[in-house]
Image (cartoon, rainbow, N blue to C red; front, top):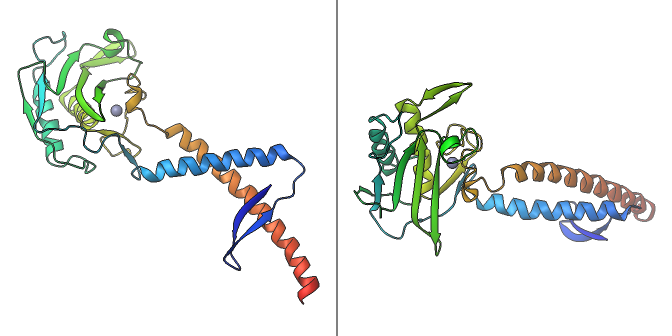
Length: 251
Ligand SMILES: [Zn+2]
């Protein structure tokens, strides 16, 4: 097996032979190395701490929005409607700074709208969502563009056995987050970012919007460390051997 490593002393690419009895160990390190290369390319392509699913998810403007405030659940508050307007305003004014475009929204009274928003009493009960899910955005995609996004929001959840209705501030942050998805954004790993998935498994319902490599990245980081340690040790070992040979013949 030959590994090409950069020799720092000569700045030349030269083969370094790794002598090890266990072939499986070398194979494994190659697999790990491959993983690291692939995954580091993926993460390099994404933003430092946030993902964009689509740069320009809508092929037209304005983006029409239908807010269903007639078929509302028992604990719906009429003040929630204004939170949708505030959330749209937030994104029009730049949002978290990760949009490639400035959206223009138009509220319409038609279910044919691009983005449809509705409330349900409790997502776990009504939509069978996993526990902890407060809202979701489900896009329909055709030719790399959104053709429709359905946003479903719950109006409260169970804390222990007690039902707790969401206040306007909570509703606003949930709506901002889901609209971020409707504008093509994925999740952020920055806790202060509105696209941080505050509720665990918040969007489990939609695999597209799940963080693409959160858990994988952690594995990759460990693998990278292991590979670097392994290669570093091997490189030093072979360098030492060479040094001994060089000392013998060139000094
Ligand atoms: Zn989300």
